[in-house]
Amino acid sequence: MMHNPLIPEILVLLHDHPDGISEYDLIQALEGHAAFKELEEDNTLSLFQIHFLVMNALYTLQQQLWQEEQLCLEVSPLKSFLTTTNQQQSDGAALIADCSNLSGYYCDWDNLEGMTEEEVEQLLDSFWNRFVVEDLRGPALLTLGLEVGCSQQQIIQRYRQLAAAHHPDKGGDPKQFIEIRQAYEVLSV
Image (cartoon, rainbow, N blue to C red; front, top):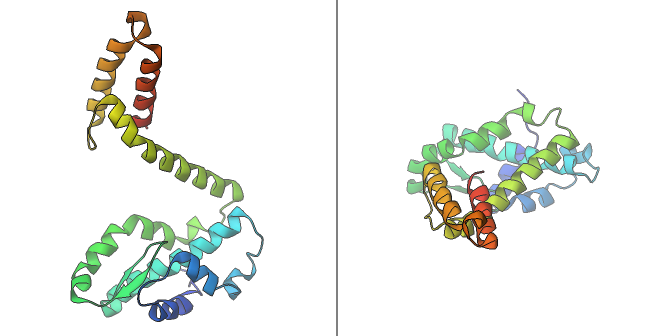
């Protein structure tokens, strides 16, 4: 298992910023760190590698601090911070469990080693596609007259009802039919 050389410096930065510090500010504070020296190319792959190293250090610290000192480290790209309040301590195990997928990803060095520029581009495309779809879900639900939390079966059933009622071959408005179909496509992803 590899040791992340950023951990000591990130721990100091977390202590120096009790109100929290963003991933961007962590990266800025660590600029010039020996771990980043090999990654000086300004491309998507090197940015991913820097991001991975920072997140790996944060999630590793999150686990270590909880196990060893019952300190809770909340990890987020927008704001990571340590807390020692009793409320947070009782929620620490739950917090770590909630982050287990991300933690598992960032604590697995195989997700960093051998990553290519093309694979990073695919990850980014996948993220942006999900982001856009999530942004379009609300209007799509309104178009179909459904509420948040509806089942896939309800979406299919409502789409079929509306498509049958508004199909151009049955005298429906082609524009409205296309809107219904687009909403269905967004909700089917």
